[in-house]
Structures are given as structure tokens and as C-alpha cells.
Length: 279
Image 1 (cartoon, rainbow, N blue to C red):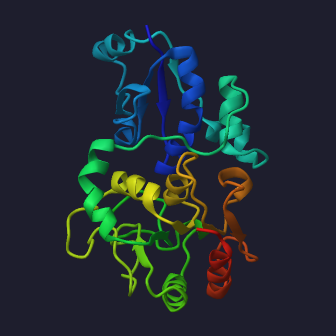
Image 2 (cartoon, rainbow, N blue to C red; image 1 turned 90 degrees about the horizontal axis):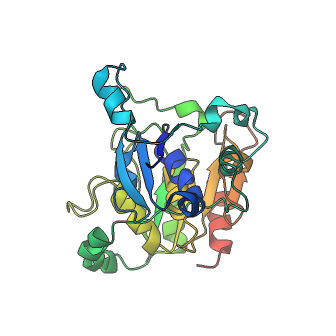
């Protein structure tokens, strides 16, 4: 019987777990996952099943379900010494699983059928980047926390203005829910793509991450989408209360705020560092 791996947490954390996939399938052939975001793994050839994390009170039907698996594995760094902040999340996860030589970059697979469907629309974008200045809670509600534990960046519009001045032909696509921020001028919104329903959710942005030229974002899910090891993308990541040594990637330009618990980084510094990159 196969093992069942249980994951919880946010989208970014789930994508980071894919760094372990190739090592895990050497032992298990195919993976069975129960997670908070099962849709992220539905189209991965290494995954046999991906279901919603939903452990109900253990009645008879629950026992019957879990008896289909050899082991129920829930190794969560957030419930261990990882929270002391001394180790990268992927390194800690790999150690929990007894894996060696695991690259930190995510290694997820996109929905290739959906990618083919979107191909013409992606080509129409021309040269584009992805940006995310707010988010990380994965929810849509009227009382969204716009402070967001010091991860939101409040000068996103100024960054966009400077980018448009330096690169007027660049298309800028914003990742985020409509209740997270005011719409940014001179950008295309995540959930209202120029009036088109084409690019509508996080799964589409996992595809766009393959085709963008670069990205600018806070420490949130877009960072992990664009840092997929097979996409060969680099970008600028803005850090406030969290640390790149725990959640980031060395191939990106990681700008750390001088002020605790907030992302206070000058827009001009963000753009200057972005323009230094080869794209």
C-alpha cells in the first residue's frame, strides 16, 4: 500500500514541498497527497492522488479511508525547530524525511492542457512581468487584513510608475485578490484580465510564471511560482518580517527592509535592482 502525505499551510508552502518530489518518488513511485490546496498537484505526473485535507472525527468511515495507506505521514516544519529561524524550510523538510542533496527551488508541474489552451493569449502579452505587492493569506473576505503581518508593500504603484518610465513596452500583470489592494494603474489585474476571463486563478499564474521575463514580489506565493527550478527565472523579492534565509532563493535579488515588521524599501531601489538583472 502507498503512503499518504499530509500538508497544510499556504500556497507557497505547498509549492516548496514540491522540491522533495523527485526524491520521494524514488522510494514511493507515485505520491498520495492530502493537502489544503489539492488543485496545485492535480496535474503532476508524480502524484497518484491529491485530495483535500479534511480529517473528520474518527468514525468508522475515517478508519476505512486511512486503512488504504501504509503510513499516514504529516511532517510539518512549522511544528518543529524550524520555527527557531535557523534553517531554510526545504532543508528542514528534507531532513525530516531523511533526504539528502535536495535543491531548495520548487519543482512543480503545470497543467499542460490548460497551458496549450492559453498559448495564444500568452503570446499576445508580449514581454511581461508578474508582480505581487500584497497577499499571503489565501482568502477573499471584506475584512482582509491589509497589514498582513508586515509582508505587504505599500509603494507598489510607485514601482509600477518607475518601471513604465524605464520600460514603456513592458506589460505588468498583478497577482492578488481584488480585496487585497486598490487597483494599480498601468497594470493588468489578476482577476480582471483586461475584461477577459482567460487568466483567472493561481493555477494560471503558475503557467504565466513559466512565460514571464521576470517578477517583483513580496514573500508570498508568487515568489515560489516564479522560482521553479525548471523555469530559469530570476526576480526581485521584498522582505519585511520574514527572512530569505528561511523562505527565499539565492538566485533572486532579495531586498531586506531596514525596518522591522514592515516592508519599507524605496521604490527606486526596487526598480534599480530589477533593471540590473539579465532577462
